[in-house]
Length: 359
Image (cartoon, rainbow, N blue to C red; front, side, top):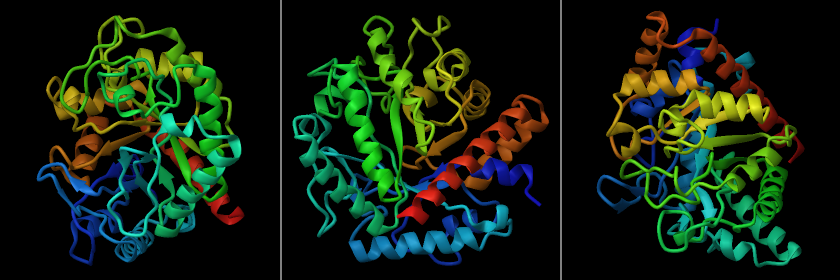
């Protein structure tokens, strides 16, 4: 029987330490007890700035993803005959956001700005090689592409790092669709980010409060209005921790805003796919909200999955499950939100299964 704890577990995407796991590893216990929705793997440990947190060599990465799948499928709970995949995720946009850049034998990648200058044939060839790389290493979810607009050249963390395809929303949609189509062809789900728009931001939400109220442009929403129509594709939408009083006049960060996630994305745009909250350990959230408050707000706002990267702080999956379960019992989190999240996550995982069967 699938319990409330199991459903909450499916909402979590956890970061963890280690390049090799065994029966006594915390992540193995998390996977084989209540289960998890997914994991995210990193090259660099943000707390030490040292490389090798989870990703060292191709052989080691393949072994690790096999181990993760083993413990997930040995879980005490049987998720619909246990045929639904563990999401094994990575940030692999290309260019400066490429967690495999130091792994020997992995291809050098180009950033979104350079991809946008390729011919259609050259772009598909580049993306095909990237997708094949992820597939060969055991990943099935890429936290890419960025669909933020290129609105700042020197400041912020989008334009200055050339992570955006273009300032033209139609070009962003065209290129994002190509990106997703190629990765899906090779069994990899993708994630559009960062809703409702990080391209005009002058700051970095990893480090604190970022307000885009005065810089945001309505064109930043255009890619989402277009891309939410592609319901046949197993994609997620990742939230931004930005404050945008044009969209939420209370000044609540988008990740925690019911006006933005449910009002705008769900109701106005008609999106019924998985909304994933960007890392809730970023300082834009932790500097202003307690953990319980952040969990209540983001789940009640409409987020289905929550990233805890364990880069900027440390927490275990059982701790999170217990807190969320208690908040449901205290009626501070609506249990219907958990049920709806679970429905969307299971549907996404079934879509990924279909991709893998086709591939």
